[in-house]
Image (cartoon, rainbow, N blue to C red; front, side, top):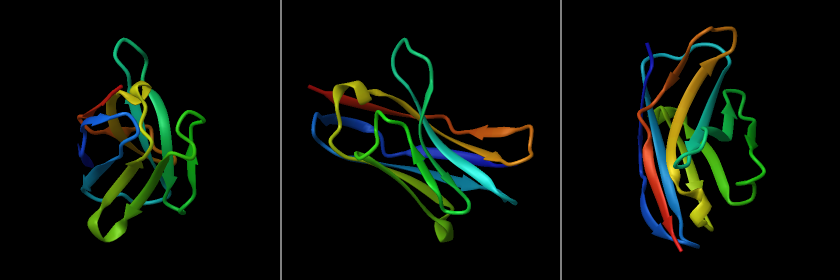
Length: 117
């Protein structure tokens, strides 16, 4: 069983930065993907960034060049560094873990990010 806890959200002005953290408890074996998703008010959840256990990363076009996903294996933590924030980045941000070959995935409870104009 994997549990995920996000933190680091808050209120920031446009152009500012935030760093989100996702701490994982429990063991994750095998090749796995860790994603950051976000859900803006009244909209569907969307993936913004992925880091694979191999180290590869991938970003949605809307955040490419502004957001950076990274991980600290010693701390079982994945980060999302968000720079040059825009009001349209306002959303609840979630982290998700999926192990390749598994039918299950794990989600955190989310952290609110609000960007004021």
